[in-house]
Amino acid sequence: MRAPLVPTPSFNTICPALLINIVKDSIVFLLLSLLIIAASLYLPEHIFVVTKRIFYYVSGDEETLTNANNAAHQVYSSATQLIRDGGHSSGALAGNGRALMDV
Image (cartoon, rainbow, N blue to C red; front, side, top):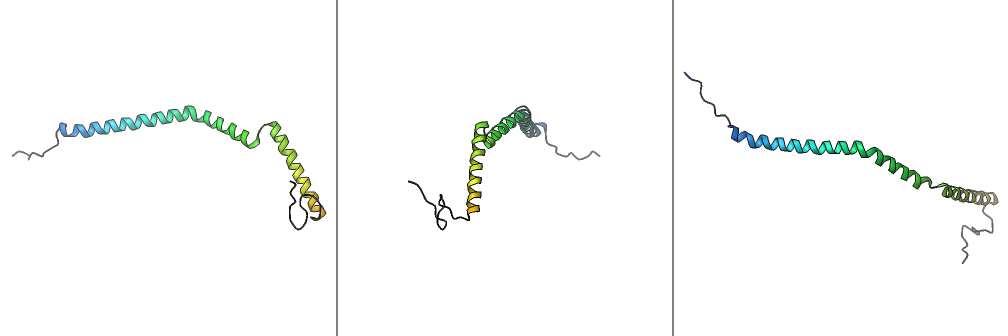
């Protein structure tokens, strides 16, 4: 007695599905490879440039730092003088918390 024949899918029915999977996997592999190569080549330089710009925008150049330091000292000295006087000065803040504006 012979073994019963089991219907198996032929090569023609497997081939399109296999071909689609191979093409899809190849495209995914190529895109991931390009992404990894681009990130490893250009990301460190880009991070360096961005950090230099952030440092410049935060701290500025030497002249800006000097001007900001002088302005901060002026504000600090004005505030300490106002505190020492107890708020009773004839300067910009005169009266009960009202500011005088020169026009």
